[in-house]
Image 1 (cartoon, helix red, strand yellow):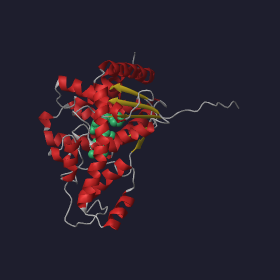
Image 2 (image 1 turned 180 degrees about the vertical axis):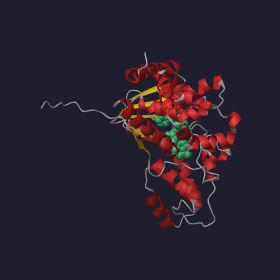
Image 3 (image 1 turned 30 degrees about the vertical axis):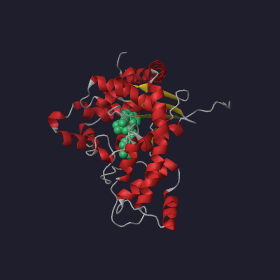
Image 4 (image 1 turned 30 degrees about the horizontal axis):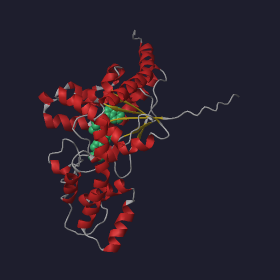
Length: 340
Ligand code: TYM
């Protein structure tokens, strides 16, 4: 038997939408923080799903600016273009091509069961809900399956979309022959869902109702510190982790733990020994956040000041992405009897 010394490096892929001027703390702790770790040791593909963004109304100038700003934020956070392939979805047309194929393999009932679609379409009403919003999970499945990743690092809210992706991969493979890798989700333990600071039972989200509930990574550090300090807690006065009965305190503990790398239990034990109150929990969490966002904003400004370099990174990313995506779509088309 001939042994090969070639070690196959596994692939990771994930994306983050350009739908706000700044990413928020949930995006970072739930997803991008893991992307940064995984780029060491995996062949990493990270992208800005701007075609997903137009499933709801977008202002064209804003969308363009936020796409570039999204890339600059990923770079400032630590995604290294020498290690990771960074690209924009609309620059790799194979995403839309495979999305259509997968849409045709998805049952209408199956797509109707996606809880994010149900929530969003209920809030917006049928007349303000695009058919694109309904097809969103199949476009996401295409984003993933195009690159055959073993791992997809995302937050908890993407779990159901990943499950659909796995089902579609298996369905295609069994009908048309082995083609897609069935990917696993990579969802962090504590930080998979960061909660709104003012409403700590709801997910922190760019569409949150009260801006004070959100920590935007690019906000002035003082603003973010203030938001942490006015976070909703409870009347018990004891610092302990209890998601159900103490959602506000638990959320702050998770945030501090993820930012400092200290386990929640250790933080709680220290506060307990010191007889600390919520004031200390908030002050320390705000300080950890400030230490993180101050240099981040500086790096972000530097990347934004060099649009030529951003364009170079994206051009190279789109080329590398298409080199993987094109043979895959060609294979899918051939297997389905579609001329290309
Ligand atoms: P998006 O852009 O809403 O969010 C980007 C990532 O941030 C995570 N996230 C959170 N994690 C913890 N706590 C929160 N409060 C929180 N809010 C958001 C999300 O889980 C996500 O990982 N559909 C995706 C984008 C996408 C994608 C893909 C992801 C399109 N194609 C292919 C992976 C692979 C989305 O809307 O994420």
